[in-house]
Length: 457
Image (cartoon, rainbow, N blue to C red; front, side, top):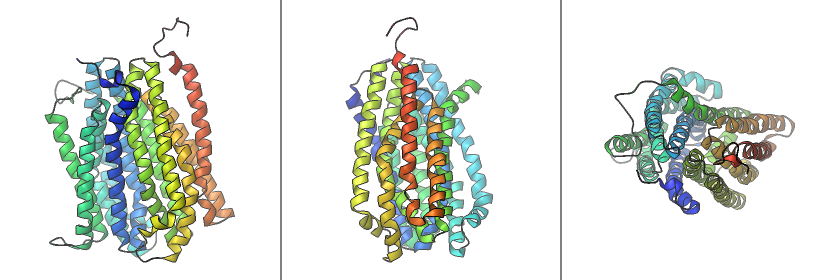
């Protein structure tokens, strides 16, 4: 078998080749999230607030899909780096089936729990009714995005970033096209309002699912997903969730954070919730490229960790962090200089309250961008080396030692304007934690990669 490019190609070039397709795919995902909110905002602030209230549940679903996929990706890439190819096949085979099992809780939410959850978050009839519709549709249809995410992570673990990019582009573009047609009833399509946004989202996910499934099973890849001649192996599932479990919890905490922040902001005004929704969509244009970069760097680090190549392992981390920092710096400058213009895209009725709340919010929160780049890449190096719980603790410290307590305190003492500063202040805690843990892991383990236990270094 020819040498895998993750073990031989120059790191800088490899990161670029591995990351740009994922970055493009993530930007497309950010684009259709923004377009979705743009068209919904044309229905009014309450419609945008309804979709914003649903976002934490969508984020939770994505957390399960991505977290499981990260565990699969990490295990496959480490096994490939160690030349244990059959174990890589078994990891892919188990991971694919786990994606179907992961869908069951969200199906239950979509069928039975959507309306009670919306009643918890709002007592505005329009928001409850349309939020229930949107939540039900996206939860029931979440099977496609969960399975497709697993498919993408399996392929990315082998170094194939092009196919996941194509699948993401197909889903995103189709969603963007279908949004105005279904929301406003253009041409032969019925006018469906918020329901149309949900149907367009699921439609795009379904196309990505079909294309990804076809390519995974009809094309030749370095790993195979078995349907015959295999049986469940508890150790493989354990190995997947040793990294994937903390990744799910880490991202799931973000869902809880979103839910809690919506509740805090909703006590002031629904407009603040809408502003948070706008920020969440726009900041994805900054964070999604970093996540795409992370998707390219993680299998490189995982492969070279498995191959015991310390030089390439650490070089991938350093260059990945530098690239992430540059992306976040650009985002910080954009949010500081043009907050009014960014908000105006979603402020169809030119609401003065939206600008009064949103402009200082954007400038305050964006101070978290640069330190967040270090947290993203530190989480990646821990996941690539099989230490997923170190990433999880970092997320807990940021969000539940940092953001929520500070937001609650500032809301009580100073009012809405200071709540936004909870995000950058929390990043200080996260940066300190990740710096200490990275130093600890380097001394304990990373610097010994490729060195025999009794060999001096």
